[in-house]
Length: 164
Image 1 (cartoon, rainbow, N blue to C red):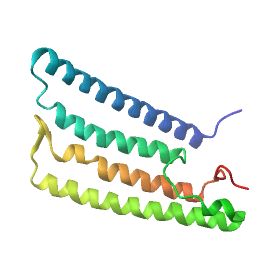
Image 2 (image 1 turned 135 degrees about the vertical axis):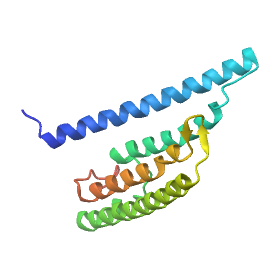
Image 3 (image 1 turned 135 degrees about the horizontal axis):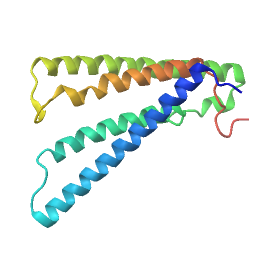
Image 4 (image 1 turned 180 degrees about the vertical axis):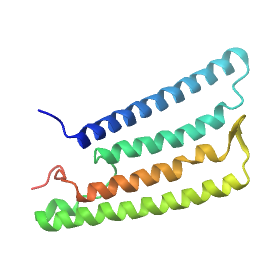
């Protein structure tokens, strides 16, 4: 059976997201390992290692949040929908997803303001990279989360585990 073009695109985007998450995790682990080896054996380290590690953890957290939201495995308060009939439970789900989308949209807007402020007076993040570049994760990540929550509000949803 032929797969719908949109489904194919989404599957490719999900695969790319998973590869990016795994690559970021692997790169951070290798960087941490290199720092440990350099400090232990050679009494030195990469001067930019800690800075890149801190920014990398933020990128990794945002990629993880996107993956969790994609699979509807993010942190959610779902005690009430378990006891409601399907209609009100669906309404509560839609309101919760749209509320999360609004909060993430606001965070993306604030992140964009931070990036623009930092761009006005950039400092070097690491040699050759201005300080605003790693901050792009804020508007991009929260914007994508807002989009993902908005789509989830109107998509079919699996009932919470333990629902009657």
